[in-house]
Image (cartoon, rainbow over all chains, first blue to last red; front, side, top):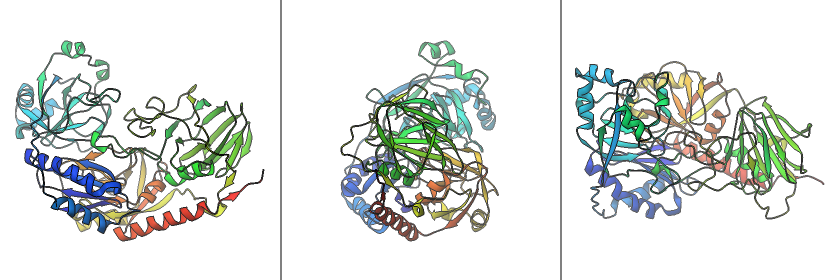
Length: 232
Length: 314
């Protein structure tokens, strides 16, 4: 389904839900999109089940943009297997470093330790990168610990915060506003503009979280000063 | 080279914006008011996209360490060179050793300062635009600090001093109506919610910055409780569960999971981004075709303006 997203943007919904197959489909559409749109393409934002396409609306109107997108969709798709590398990300889980842990536990009728065990007990897949530089959306979180975003987003979420929203999980690469439920802190830098690759993960990779102690967190370069005064 | 004596509240080096990097999660950045930014460059004898300064809330003081030609545009404020008042929207010759000072805006929020040759800043991910939240662009990824040295590029040709006709100078208003293109989850909002949104007046809250303008007013109920995060266009109006709309601007997150009513016309994003907390905002619905017509008209008018700039005598 193709939908208007703004004066110079279309959004293509590939499927209603996300999943490994949908992620493959999206990745496979991107090269054709770049070729067919060519110089009319300003930017592309792939995500879970959608691709946002920004075109130069001073050169083509939305009818032409839709026609180009239809052309992309009619191209024979190359099946791309995205069985990416496995990346382990250490997490210092605690009620101090993850202020929403107890609320998640209460909501699920579980103990805090159960929530931690469930969160680190599976592999996730990188479905999209966005929101902020290096912010990787990982899915799918076990339904028992899934929780909606906060009604009012926090103004400051610390760098490295490991978080859950619905059935997605992620590590905040830098301090920013955010509405996700915080469960811990990860000391691994998620985005480095000065070195290649800029990120430890890319779309299609698999991620596993591994619990570490506070000392290990500090030993791995984690910054505890962010917790001074608590995360409000 | 220009040296920063006082950085003001928030002065940022910026070019036209960072495009093609959304896949890494890098936002567009760039000038909130592209017309004022582009015109500052043109009047300084540059192409419209050269690196210039966006000065939010005034208070910038620079020392010119070389002769230069500058132009200041955008939200009106007191501009002085060696304490002598100078006009906005026209090129000004500066002697080495002069002090350039920008006071506080008397209307609007963001003023642009361009220099002939442009500021010579190494692009990061294809652009010099500073995005403070990302720590990318500008000198070291941040706003200007006292003592910063701003290198100036080689001027290709001798610049002629020019002035924008008085009638073309925009007004910076406190109460505005902005156009919204129905988009994204527009159809998923109930008719009642949409009626509330379009018939109400919203105030710009204190949480208004280059990332987005959080508004305060009658709550817009949304039927969508949870959705997959998706790419966000400039001007997208997202409605979190508390029903208070947020208009997302240049430094917005590239992806988000709140339902969106539609997207504000870019020309109106620029006007909104010049509004301060407390400003009154109303929304009106326009079609995508009307949006394209307005953009084309704006573009044509701007092209025509370029051939009608007044040249100033020496």
